[in-house]
Length: 64
Image (cartoon, rainbow, N blue to C red):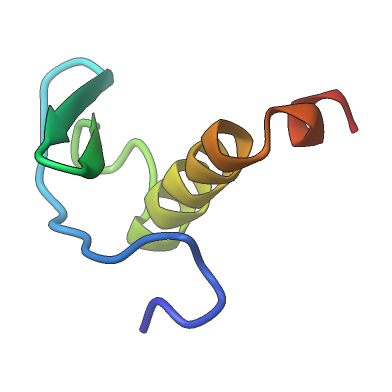
């Protein structure tokens, strides 16, 4: 449930090292965060991506 987040879609997966990727697909900006299993739980990954998306949407938010 992504209610009250800026995220439209989340796919959870794993990576050996934390990796943040940003790409544009048409008019959509895609941010991907892959982390090793056991490093962060799914809720923490979603919160991290939501915070990052919020800062991209409202850059002044980063200063607060």
